[in-house]
Image (cartoon, rainbow, N blue to C red; front, side, top):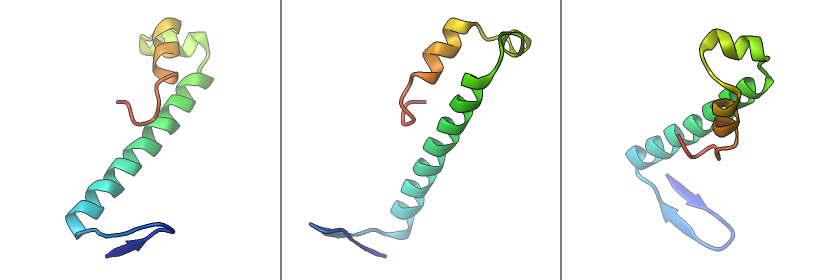
Length: 66
């Protein structure tokens, strides 16, 4: 597969493409899960065993950090 961007182009083999696709999917999943965590009430947090401080720490991470 060849990917062309305005200033450069590079070849990407299928395994490399699969790796990047997997990483992007992980980032989207983390962002979605952190959004859900941000909307949880204190009671829901208590039910799953997470403190408000732990929630704050998790939802403020960038999507690429696990």
